[in-house]
Amino acid sequence: RKLAKDLGVGDRVHFLGRLPALEDVYAKIGGSDALVHPALHEAFGQACLESLALGVPVICLDWGGPGLIVDETSGYKVVPTDREETIARLSEAMRHLATEGRRLGAEACRSRAVGEFSWSGIAAEIDTHYRRLCAVPVESMAVVR
Image (cartoon, rainbow, N blue to C red):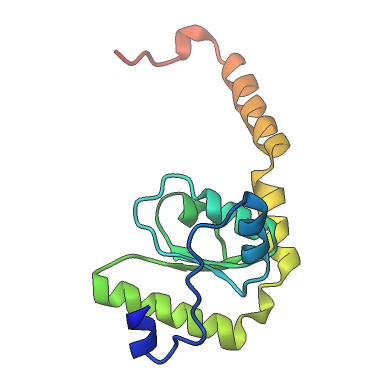
């Protein structure tokens, strides 16, 4: 809070703390301009997927789950390098979204979440892989020991 005040953005940055219910979290995300997700150690990126499903673009690192979930139609990905450069690129992405990011519409974000990451889509992809593997004769499969 002190840093936000010192940087002159204290009136625009709100620290909400723990919200009482998941619906409250979704309401806050859904009413936001973007979800900024700078985590470097994130295996899946559930918050990013939830944000897109709510029609809100994501600014994240191009790493782990968030880097796989977010694409050019649904947000901005920053390749992590050293601390200063990564922070500068995240800041640049935020400025770009604020000034020119209207192309990242809510429908494009929802489409990315539902089109690529729905349970039925994932199940169909797994089914396709299993069917392909089952069609391969066992003798031709490599055995890892």
